[in-house]
Image 1 (cartoon, rainbow, N blue to C red):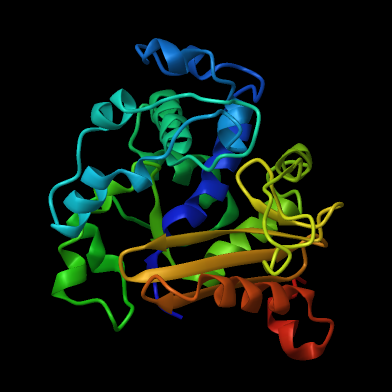
Image 2 (image 1 turned 180 degrees about the horizontal axis):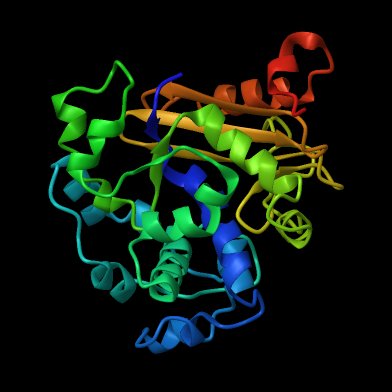
Amino acid sequence: MSVVPVYSIAKAYTAVAVLRSFDVEGQIGELVPDLPEALRSVAVRALLNHTSGLNDYFGWADYRAAVDAHEDAWEIDRVLDGAVVDRAGRFRYSNIGFALLRLALEREESADFFTAISRRVLEPLGVEAFPFASRGDWIACTHQSIGDDLRAYDPGWVFTGTFAVEPDEAARGIAAVMRGELGDDIPRLMMQSVAVGAPDAHPLSPSAGYGLGVMTKGQPVTVLGHGGQGPGFNLFAAVSAGRRRWSGRVAEGQGEELALIQACVDDVERRDDAVESRVAV
């Protein structure tokens, strides 16, 4: 399997680093100074499970146009200046929320995102990953579809922070977290999910939810994981609630999201020998 940027799958790892570093009930303004007034009182938990009421830069027309034009990424202050908090308490997916958590981790570690996430999560789990923060970092990505046009994309546009890794290795790391390799409290906290209102046909239905940094299926949770989508690739990493099976898959382009999620869910829910290679010893 090839090394690719995993985009938002990194949110699961960010969540683990946050849970190892901060009080989940604390406010982000205590961790990141000089934030706009409207953001300071937002709880860390609300950022982790997307119930802060924050909007999302992904849908901004100027953001999409700049990315499509292969422009250099904006400074983070431009994103924060456009942040709006509205109707907190319900699920509303927000990349801005995880960008704030990234800033908190970088400040805590006095380091860039990849260094911070490596110290707190990747290295303790033995996950082999690579930085993905500038155009030069495409060099670590090995997928055969990567050409000059894709390398023109500036990874700095992923304001939440991400890294490059084999998708199945990313899923294995989440499974290790859920087995308690970084502490028993972290799996318990991450599976405290809120309903997201997904349709019945969604692969994570019934009872599709979002915990602290992970997407969830069922109540109680039977499957958890995260998706990632960005220039060149669509990905998903899934883990069984029993923490013994995992699956990470990647598809070229940015379509077929539900089919990819379904394939990963099927992998970890299967009860035959076909997933034996993904069963932890």
